[in-house]
Length: 122
Image 1 (cartoon, rainbow, N blue to C red):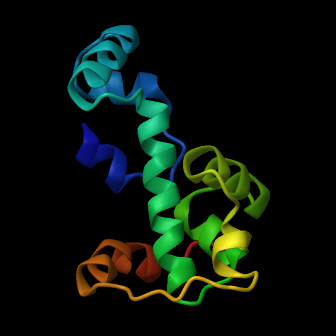
Image 2 (image 1 turned 90 degrees about the horizontal axis):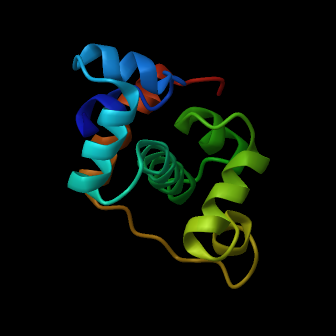
């Protein structure tokens, strides 16, 4: 299920569609996922999108490009989610001095390669 969520992170697939795919009720899927992963499905999807957008911003993409490419509806949506997870806004980390000096591991490039290939709204 986690892999399906990651593979479809750019789409806003309803939980009922995920549940149908694994032949469970929505409530049962949510309960099992939270037991196994420790997060509700929607939180897991949001955290994955923040992760993807963080890599993109570290690679030099604008916050808007990163937000739209990671599946957020806007840079404001990304900013709210990023702050809720990390305690600060992405602009405070990547744009305002002293900026974070980032080094992106090659494995992170593999994670964002499908996103960059699809170039959603960039």
